[in-house]
Every structure is written in structure tokens, then in C-alpha cells.
Amino acid sequence: MPGAKIVLGVSGGIAAYKAAEICSRLGKAGHSVRVVMTKNAAEFITPLTLETLSHNAVSLEEFSHAFEIGHISLAKWADLFAVAPATANILAKMACGIADDLLSTTFLAVTAPVLVAPAMNANMWRNPATQANIDTLRARGVRFVGPESGALACGDADIGRMSEPEAIVAAIEEILRPRRDLAGKRVLVTAGPTHEPLDPVRFIGNRSSGRMGYALAEAAADRGAEVTVVSGPVAIPAPRGARAVPVTTTMEMYEAVLREAEGADCVVQAAAPADFRAEAVAASKIKRTGEELSVRLVPNPDIAAELGRRKRPGQVLVAFAAETDEAVANARGKLVKKNADFVVCNDVTKPGAGFDVETNIITIVSPEGEESFPLMSKREAAERILDRAAALLASGETK
Image (cartoon, rainbow, N blue to C red; front, side):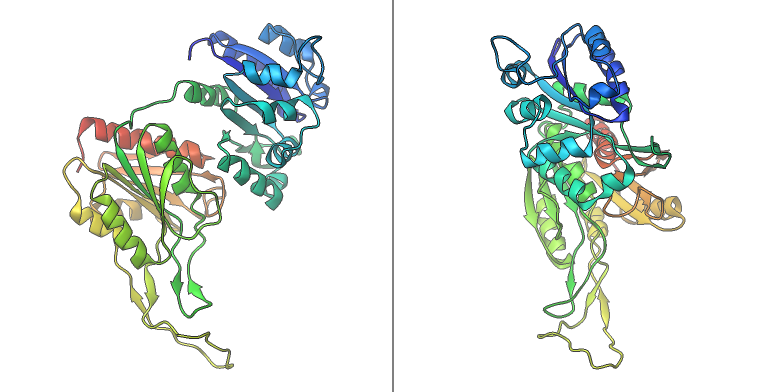
């Protein structure tokens, strides 16, 4: 969308100074920018700076225009609403529908796509309240870019640093000019853990949250694909734009995946199904007796290996390898054993790359070699994975 109209919301964090470069980059790209600042944001960067760079008056007060209501006029004008930085406070207001300043009121009125770039202390980011607010906003269609790990204003080196202006502007451009390189393709994604019952109360499982798989599903849908997600039990909102097939056990996932894979052009296996299940499941709750309990485990079917055996010409298979040691070597072994086109490898012992976090550190292992990526959001990691899958689909050069 050449010459798009962008409302840039700036809330009160130290990263507010980066809004100047965001304005500059958007202007150079040919977009019109109108800035809305909170009063606290004006303590970090002056409105005059952003007025100069955006070539428009900065809005601070609800009734700053003589003949129109500020938040309504801004909301109607916007082709896209971006908030950078988005503090924990403004995320909470957005999630709860609180409208006590021009920025939060504009958000409630806007119907254009919304992108937020969080910035805050790592503990504030990890707080369950903040994570719940993020999940709520994602479920309502709000897009996120970042945060990243790095040096924070508090002196810590941790997650919470706002993405750089270049990345934020790239995310804005992606929304305005979405890639449609998967249009007409059917993509199957597996996500989350499986639960293998021991009795009606207990189960064997793992710490997978489903966030990586759901990020892949949303990214594929945004790129035009018809997406199906076979998902184990998770506690996050269903991925936007995808058809969900819920399962609980590995056997249920096995049957659903094989059924759905028959018509899929690309299968991305981001789930973490249990490798073993109890040979016998107790009909009632196993009571504590004070004595040792022995449970005999039997292997579950290998979903990835079976997909590899059934792989059709031109179909792209992507496997995942969550490892704790010799990650790349193990991923390369999986590449051959599962007949995958490439394997997404991550060492879950690395900070920011484990389970139930918003970030990941991945290495793509293929017959041609390895390509490693730095710590990034799971959505960004999903885009890099889909870049590789889309290129294979376009070339037809699959295994």
C-alpha cells in the first residue's frame, strides 16, 4: 500500500526515543505518519521532535482539535495503528478496554490492523498478567514484533528490549504489503504437547506450550495458505486464520495428522508428541500406598517417520528437533531418518529458546548445510522457516 496512513502511538518508556527513527523511516518509505503520545512519553522525547520528523502535529490530548473528536478522526484516518514502544501499562489498557487517554481511546476506535512493539523490564514481560494480556490481544488479531533480548535500561541483559526501528518498519510493511507466496497451498501444522493418561487424573506430558506451532500457523495463513493445525492440549488462543483439529494423545495426533497430510502441500511438525504411553491405563485414580509404583511404558508411533514414508513427490516435510546436547548432530540424523526436507533445530537449554517462552533460537538443518539464526520472536522464527518451505514449494526441489 504505497503512501499508507499510519498512526504511531508512543507510550512512556525509555525506548520512546526510537520512535524518531521509526517516523523517519516510514516517511522515507512514502507513508504519512501521525503520532499520538501519552503524557509520560513526552517526558522521554519531545513532541516537537516527532512533529518535525512526521510533518504532522503530535496529538496529546483527547480534544486537541476544534471541530472533531481526536480519537475518532485518528481511527478513521489510519490504514495501520502501531504502538512503539508498548509498555506493560498500555498493553494492559488495550487488553482490558480501558480508555483514559488519547492513545488507548484511539485503539478502541480503530478498525485498521494493529501492531505493537513491547518494551519493558524482563520481569514485567514475564509476569503472568502481562502474558495474559498479550494472549488476549493476539486472540483479537493484534500483531506483535519483539521484544528482543539485550541490554535493558535497568542494567539487566535480558528479554524486554524493544525491537530496532528497522525491524518494526519491516513488520509494518509486511502488514501493508503481505506476502502471498503460499496462496493456493495447503499447510498442515502440528503444535503443542500430547497427554498420555496413567489414570483418570494423571498423565505423562511435557512442557510444550504450542506457541511455536501457532506462530507458524498464523504466519502461513497471513501468507495466503489454507492452514490446518492439529494441536495437543494448550492454554493459548487458537491461531487466527487456521482450522483447528484438537487432539489429546499421540495416537489421536497420529491418526489426525496422517488423515490431514494426504491433501497437504507442506507439513510442519512443530508438536512435541510423547514418545511413550502407559501400556495399561488404570480405570480409577491410583491411590498413594507408600510403596513404589511401576508403570510399564510402550512406544508410541513415530508420526514424523510415518509421514516421511508416505511423502508424496513435491510435498514439503519440515521436522523439529528440540535437543539438550549435540543439537545439530541429532537434527542431521533426524533429517535422514524422517525423510524430511529440512529440520528446525533448537537447543532448549539456551535462555530464550526453551519451552513456553515467546522467543526461540533456531538452526535450519538441510541437505545443503546449516543456517543459524539469533534469538528472535517465535513469529519471526516462523517467517524464516516458511521462507525456506515456500522456496522449496516454488522450486519443486523436495526430497
